[in-house]
Length: 404
Image (cartoon, rainbow, N blue to C red; front, side, top):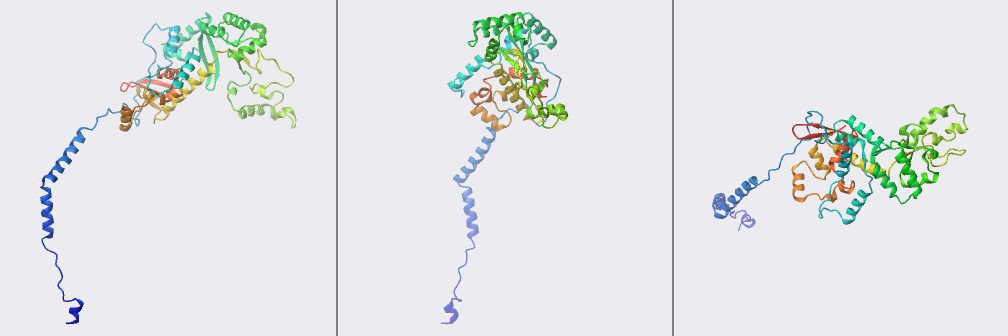
């Protein structure tokens, strides 16, 4: 035996059969023609066609945020009735201020429902004069009618200083007298004396001195504690009430401190610097007692819980403005804005399907959690009256609302 035979150089190598590729192709062909493969192909084509035909057709959105709304002129929120008067408008605003409570399966707990009803009952029956003007065709005629009703004793103006200016509310005289008569924090003499002054001065906004008003200092203090009188500062600028302390005292130092000698009281503002800047601090050297002056300010007539009404109104207006600020041009169709206020979702396909099949519980919306069910129509008219938004006609998607 040779060495090559021992090492294996002479052995025969196994060759791959030439029919392997053809056999595999024949197997694929036979497999493709088998009933099982044909059934798979038919099922696949049927599924594709059925999925394309059964796709839900969704309505297109009413407005695209990438384009501006067509402006066809200003729109009015006045009611169709031409015989609407201030008394009827006053009652209508109070009636439409809140939406009815939703059904039981709404996400509102019994405690939340109780708090909503308690808050609504505690609110005073007041409306803003700017809201009244949005319901009537002529604001000038509405103002004349309000002035006539005030002088006749049917209603009373309540002027309150706010962060955004001066707010004017209107309350019926019978409602105000009912609140005075039913107040538990006032004695009978105080009630009778204050009611006598209200009936004798129907158009008065500021309460006069103790001698002119006919009430003692203790009686005036009781009225302030209950909420029928409030102290407002008249010194300095009107905006000084809400200005920061640094702004108020900076103006004071520019006028007086520059001419004062170093180390003196005048160099830091002088005697009664806080009082002169519009604050409520007492002056050194004795000051006037409480009653007609509360830290140098006048006493204005108001109603109890007026602060809760103003807080609710300002919060609702801020939320309405925030909804418009999120859009590109700070405008939106009224229908879309109403849906967003009520907690709905508008826009793309996924949001539409989520709303259609899952839904948004009313108790989870900001309308019910923070604003106790304030209606959209009420807050929209309040915003128009305050000059926050403007409403215009589009002739395509209804009325549009734009943030001013």
